[in-house]
Image 1 (tube, one colour):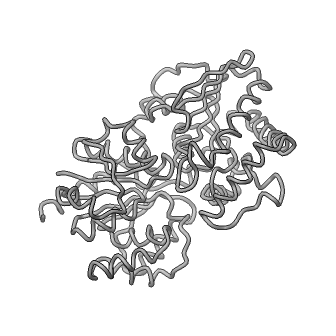
Image 2 (tube, rainbow, N blue to C red):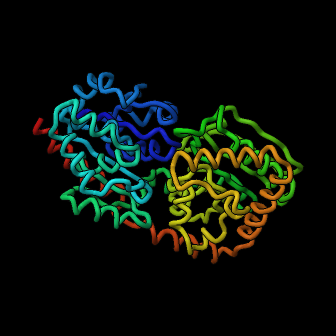
Image 3 (cartoon, helix red, strand yellow):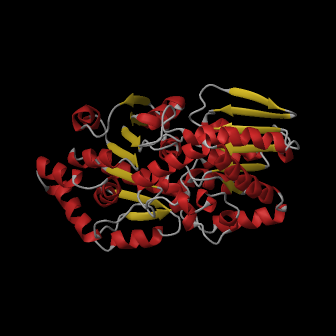
Length: 419
């Protein structure tokens, strides 16, 4: 069976989930097609796919030959690929890790009408109805038109699943973390490479999305680089600080007194090994990073948000110890409030972050805030950190990825037999 797959090109989260799924299905079966940061990641992990093809998944004409050769399609939050798979009559499976996040500017019944048009209407009517929707609504429609759909659990997700199911979509299921648990558990079983008490892992993720980029709108990377170096100067008891990000493809090592600071982009397997071997970790409120830290039994320090989605994620963690210890731009004053909109909120965060980079008094206010949260985090006892991990883990429960893939294999084999 040949499977064509893609992932939304926003950070490393979606494509890392596709890699986890592909690894359990059998990498020789799954071909990747996509662009942007998702393509970058897939190329760095090419051994997890049968082949890696660059292509714009909004272009049906470019996808048509590959869809004709595919028995089934898997998409992680790439709504366009789901659309074209349905229009080409291919069985399609959809994974979504952010169902709690997508804005609802249309009632579920209206989205169900669009879904029927996509499935049953003519080519022009289907595309017109789909393209009239915003990016968030297209993902909700992708849930409705897929043959099978899994939504990763997080506060608010169960309610969204029920809302979509009320339109007749009984194929949308809840699942637990969609992460590479096999590699992570294997890394946890290995002896640590470093002295965990003196190591600090800072994970800035893939960073690049629909607005942020490594070469432009990149103030956050400059801000965090300066803060990490200042932290190393102040926290001389640390031995090693490792900063991982898709934007650091050229490794750099800086010696700050007795502290070695590395900026790099690791393969996911290497990153998970480092996570398993560290005593402390920090990251923006990214769900994939959060889930990996929880599975590794490492309480994360949440860093200020990179984009609007991180604001929403942090809100859903309200009341937890992880949230109480988080460093947030909004804590710096009312002027750091942003629009309640994915694109506009992200643009404003980038502008505000640039201000922190360019204005020395503003940077020093930022540094004092993040230093204070870091010191409080580091002062927690092992028992307090374990309690914080348990608290977040309780919010993420659901069927394991292994059980999901077992069901998925059966469904794909059945659909493949009907072709």
